[in-house]
Each structure stands twice: as structure tokens, then as C-alpha cells.
Length: 257
Figure: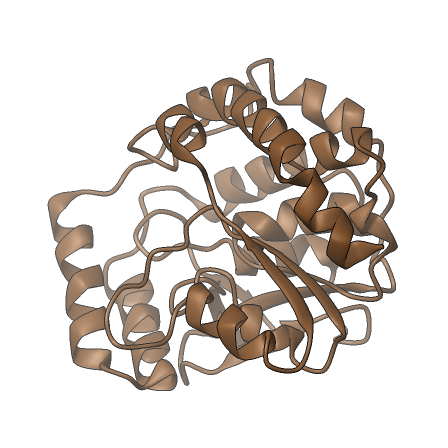
């Protein structure tokens, strides 16, 4: 989508702040570093041999739903329960394998000044924002932001364990509060449980800012497949996202310009 928007003359890399959550942490790093989006787009059309084809099992799925239901409307409690899952039912993927995947996806190891990555403290359940002033490498920050319990191993640094920043809120759009213009790209916008989702977050942002929420259209949903952790769907996903961006460009331009 970012590449499609760029071809329509809309460069979101110029944003004052870029927030990346989970898989968005990789994309956010590329965008904030002003990496060539055409090159990044092209890289998604060919297989990445470092990728691991991951999927959830019945137990992991059950534990996720349990965490969402028992966590109720309390983000911190829900985050802590997901942290417990990561520790008590660890991923079969090793830390070394995961770091190899992260390295293969990252286009830079230098912190861009306007980049913020989200991660959840696995012990307390608190959501944290990691940036260039956090004293942690970009590699570790991105690894933590995408450490889905049961899929990928939790990440340890600073004497703490960390899991995916999107386990409670898939996009964390509420972090954009205070900005005048906000574009939210949310490939997984569905709400699970009782914690407000991205649509609620954006509706609240729109009370004081020009904010737009972009979610997958019908073609993009089909292109992404049923298993969002399967890298073989990358080519169809980026093609569908590019085409959708062309359609979305006029409405985004009204806000961004």
C-alpha cells in the first residue's frame, strides 16, 4: 500500500512520527528510514529463504481466546496473560531462528529519529513504546514487537521479557493522540474481546484530528489467505495492497496534503 500511495504522489515517510506494531514494525522501520519502497515491494514478490512457515495449533488458539475473554476490558491483564502463554507454552522456533528471520526482513539496523515500535512486557502486561532513546537495538525492538506468543519466542533485553505489541491492540492507533493528521494502516482490524479496537481508536482520534483508517478490501482479504503467518501469501498480498492503495489515494490525499 505504501508503494502504491507513493506512486500516487503520497509519501508517508514524511510523517512526524511513525508507529509500528508487530509486522508493522518491519514496515515502519523501512518507511521511517526512507528505504526505496519500490525495492521493498519487489522483494516481496520472490521467496525469502530465511522465512519460517509458522502456524497456530489448537492449544495456542484456545489459550489466545482464553486470554482475551478473561482479560476482559483490561489491556494490562490481557497483556500479562499473553505473556504467560509465551513463557509456559514456548514456540518451537528457537531464538536463533527468529533472529535470522528478523535480520532477513530488516532493511536497516539504525534507528530512524521518527520511528516508534510497540512491545508488551511479558511479566507486567504493560505496553511500551521503543525508540532510538530506549537503549535497545532496532533488531531487538522489532523482534520483540513481532514476538507472537506460541508462534515466535519471546525476546529478552533490559532484564525483561517482551512479546508482540499487537496482542492486545493489533494497531495501537490510540498512540497517535495529539497529532493533527493521522493515517492508520491496519491489515488486521477485527476486535477480539472487550478492549476497544482500531475502529474505536480512530473514531476517537477523529474528534480532534483529521484521521483516516485503511483496512483490507475484499480482494486484499482473499489475497492474504487464512494463515497470516504463511509467507507464501506475500506476493498476492502486496499486489492486492498496491491496487487498493490506488483506490484509496484520493481520500488519503485530502488528509495528508
